[in-house]
Length: 232
Image (cartoon, rainbow, N blue to C red; front, side, top):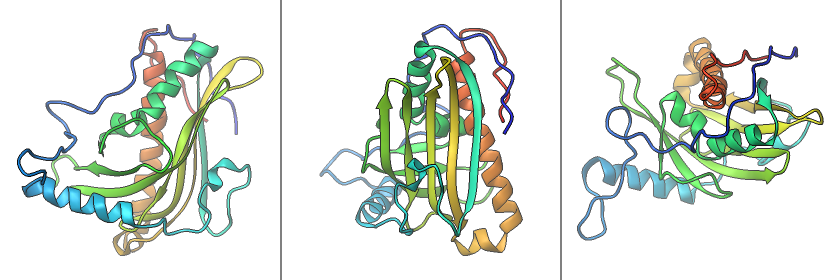
């Protein structure tokens, strides 16, 4: 894996991401009344309750922490250089723990809160100019890390996810003070529609990873006026 070209470190003022407001994909919230949401929110809450009661559909929970990923899955490691120094690490780490990768890629996160171990969320996506229904993808945060040289988290798939496996989003600083963002994943297709359209599903996965990298790189470079570093 070759290192990407580097940009000047950004200044320290990129806020943590927040759920999209107005246009785009709003985060659904329960309606008022007797404590029960109605309509679309009611269906979303039912799916959230079902996801919270479910267990990950793979045995190697937490394996994205390890240097060696488990056999029997497609493995992926992609990274991008963000800058230099602990301020860049802290800023990018806040962005990642606040689901910045997903929000910056067009997903809505329900319920929205910074990533914490054991949290179950629904990632929701509507394809633009598409008649297909909104995708609702259940996930669970399986680990987080917030250390002087590493910040990030991983989530695992739950029943109803088109894939089976785990994905980690990690910002780290090496001994030279260079800051990197890396996506680490192991997965296999599980939903029938994903297996049926395997080439398209794999392309969508690749494009999603690229957009994750771009979202974090853009956030890290936002105050420098740069175009964002290349990935490797």
